[in-house]
Length: 202
Image (cartoon, rainbow, N blue to C red; front, side):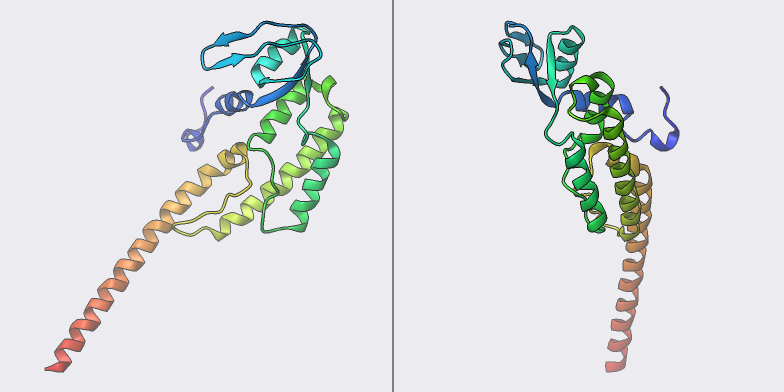
């Protein structure tokens, strides 16, 4: 997929999904499986009905083969996400604490393991959408507070940062140039004032 020129400096969606699928997640195997050594990771011995953590991509393969159930993360439930939504509304100047890949992990599990989730998929999608929208509004408001050297993105997920990055980087670059020009002009004026003061001494 070819991304628009404005997004080409960003991670493509497939790469963000790749990062998310490397997150560890708990599974409940239906069968015992011997450990498997793979490049970059090891799947431990899996015993039937004994919880174990594996990368999400491994869990999805086992799930597709009907060899395990996926135990949803503690944060992926309607009650918890509604609490986070309320936090977002109550604290307009800060983002609530959510996992780094919460959006992608929740999307993947809703698409491929909805039957393992504790709440109905439509309710989860609704509260996730509400939470996503309120955080997006806050991030756009936060762009107004940009300066040439600092931006606060504490609490934003990788996907959320990736979305605003095309707007943030050019603005910060322009602010930096403006700051450097203003600083240079101030230095020049200060030097002139010092020269004028020296002339007055004579």
